[in-house]
Amino acid sequence: MRIPTTILLAFALAVYLNRFNPIYAALNLTLLAAYAFFDFVALRTRIRHLARFGIVTLMVMLLVVVPTWLEIQARYASAPYEHIHDGAIQTEQAIQFLLAGKNPYVEDYTQTPMAQWGPYFGLEPASNPALFYLPYLPLSFIAPLPFYWAFQTWFGFFDLRIYQIILFVGLFGLLFQLTPDWERKLALAILVPLNPLFVPAFIEGRNDVVVLWWLGLMLYFLQRRWVAMATVALGLACVVKATAWFAVPFFVTHLWLNGFRAPRDWATRVVGPLSLIGILFILPLVIWDVRAFVADTLWYQSSAFQITGQGFSQILLGVGILADKWAAFPFTLVQFLVGLPTLMLLVRWQAARPLIQRMIAAMTVFGFVIGFFGRAFADNHIGFVLSLALLALGTGEE
Image (cartoon, rainbow, N blue to C red; front, side, top):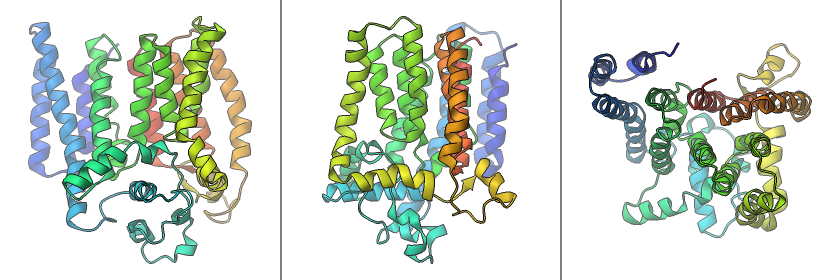
C-alpha cells in the first residue's frame, strides 16, 4: 500500500509546526490544505502534478531555506561566531588560510572566530583539540572558493551556508529526476529535504548536504548508465567527507554485477576518474604536509575526537567502561571487526538483485554500522544515513 503524499507532508510539517511564529505555521497549514485538495480531488493529471510540485517546492523553501537565510542575516548583524556551527566557521577559516597561501591542515584555529564559538568560549585553547585539527577533506573548502570570492567582493561578507543553500536547491530539483513515478517524485521531495534530523543541521551550517548532492548526482548518472560521470560524482563526494567512502564498494559491486567488466572500461571510466580526482584534490595537500593531513583527516576523527552522539561509544561511557569522553579506545578495530562481515553480507544481498536501489540501501546500512561503532555518531550523522535510506526507499519498488 502506498501512503498518500498528503499524509507524508502532514507528518513532515508536524515536526516543524511549533518552531516558528504562529502566522508562519498557519501559512504552512494553509499550503498543506491546498496540497490535500490537489492530491485528493479528481483533476486533470498535468494540473494536479504541477500544483502539488509548486506547493511542495514552496513549503520546502519556507521550512528550510528561509530559516537558514534568517540565521545568516542574524549572524551578519551580530558576530561571526554566532548563529552558525563551529564546523562551518572552521571551513570558512580554511578558505581564508588557503587564499593566504597557508596550509589549513597545519594552521591552528585559536585566533579565529571558531575559538569564540558558544560552547568553546572561555575554554583554554590547549584544552580544546578541535582548534588544532581540520577534520574535513579538501573539496569542502576548495569548492566554495568562487562563492567566497564573489560574495566578499560584491558584499564584503560570506557565509558558508550561501554555498550550501545553492547545493540544497540543486539537490531538491535533482530528486524529481530520480524516478519517473510522480508519487515517488513527490515523496522524495517531501521526505529527503524535510528529514527532521537533516534540517536543523543544515540550518546550522553542517556540510552533509554537500555529500548528499554529489551522491544524488552519482545516482542520477548511474540510472542513465553514464558510468564515468557517476564515478566523478562519487569521487567528488569522497574528497568532501569520509562518510562517502562507504559507498565505493557497493558502487563497484553494482557495476560488476551489471556486466561492466571490460578492463579498458574500468581503467578509463572508474579507476582513471577516481585517480584524477585524488591527484587534483588530495595529492597537493599530502605533498604540502603529509603528517598534518593524516593527523587531521584520519587520526583525529578516529582517536582524538571527543565521544559524542548516540552510538556505541555512549554505551561504553554510560556503563563506565570509558572514564570520560576523551578516553582512548580501539574504535577503529571494533569498526573493522563488525564492518567486514557486514560488508560481506551486504554484497551478497546486493548480488541477489543487483538493483541501484539495493546499492543505495547497502551503503546506507554499512554507513550506519560503521558510524554507530565510531567515537562520534551525532544527530547529523544519523540524519545523513536516514536521508540515504529515504533515497533508497523512493527510487525503487522494493
